[in-house]
Length: 248
Image (cartoon, rainbow, N blue to C red; front, top):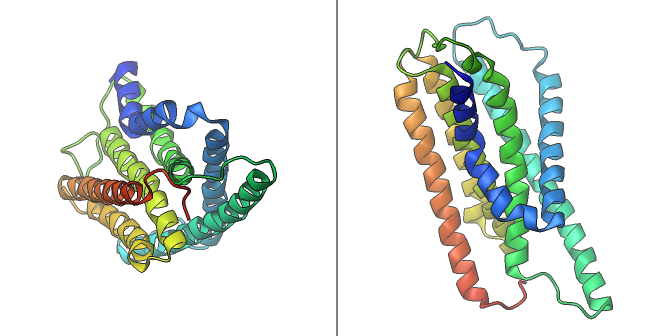
């Protein structure tokens, strides 16, 4: 493989996130700060989880249940971090609205809040892609194609890039859905996010079976596509309801 192949795999994992950042986030400094703070939150959760996992790693058993336990704890903890992140955002929103009232400026509109949620989700997604994709792409820049024994149908770097792409889109969309669910007290949105996160994470265990990537990767992509569609429908409905009025 060549440098071009390595860069191509990196763009598979990070390309859509980069497009969102350039087209939407980079135009507003506050959104850039939101991405950075969200990334920091995800890193903190990873550090805390790694400390908890230290007693279990490395896993020497050939059974899959230890990996399922790790995935379960990871999803639960990350969803808790998502809720804490939303709570802090609500505090900041109250401060911004109070400042707007004092200076006779407009409060945050629904579009502003959706963009903040998008930026928060993008931070989670980029952090996941960097640590679970770019950190594994070193072999892709060499002269050979690296395969793993249990999935000889696809290059390992391509598998890693597609998984990172799927989770980056799931994290980005899920933050928008979760913020709406918390703000509107809508249980369906609040439940959808951790459920789809858990399903997508469990699906990665299929890759441990011989040839499992042929099944697991498409299922992960379908989960990401379903999350994006759900997010699109939700945002479209909220925008039709608001008609440009300040969000409540």
